[in-house]
Length: 186
Image (cartoon, rainbow, N blue to C red; front, top):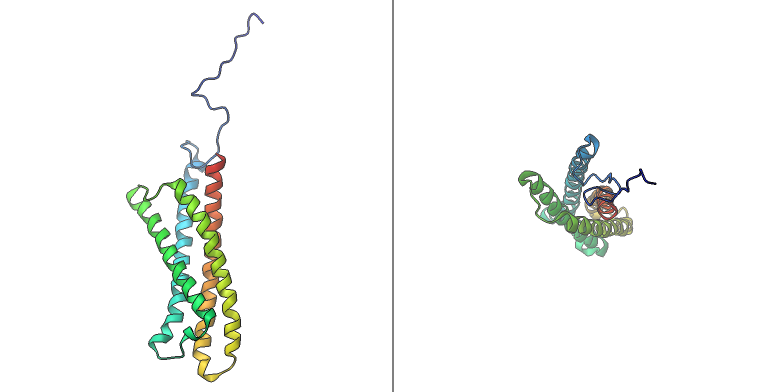
């Protein structure tokens, strides 16, 4: 072993290369990958904002036309409250994403934001699904009553938009879960 020199560990040398898209690498896929995630997340947040706003507005619109009021049904009030909550949540994350792009800065740190969005996407997804499923018996209870025909159509539209919001939030939850796992693992 006289001619073999020992290999020492250098602190500048990484033991294992990291394929994380959140590190500064020069690879073409990993440098464009976070941009794809950012823009797809923004598009999904926009759709969740749009669908939840339409869901809330469609329930609130009969108030202005003097039609039957949705407040008589607890299930529809719950659906309205969750739609308002989803609208505010989606708007705040859409604003944060647009602010990060426009000013190339962070409104909230990425580590904290990934953890918060992962938890709140899961929670909001549950609330949206439960409000949509709770509104179905109220819609069936309205039956074919001619006085409630307009409210029934509005409730069906609101429930459909609430379910579409759930699908958009579920896709956002997958992206936020992916980003959080990448931060934790690498």
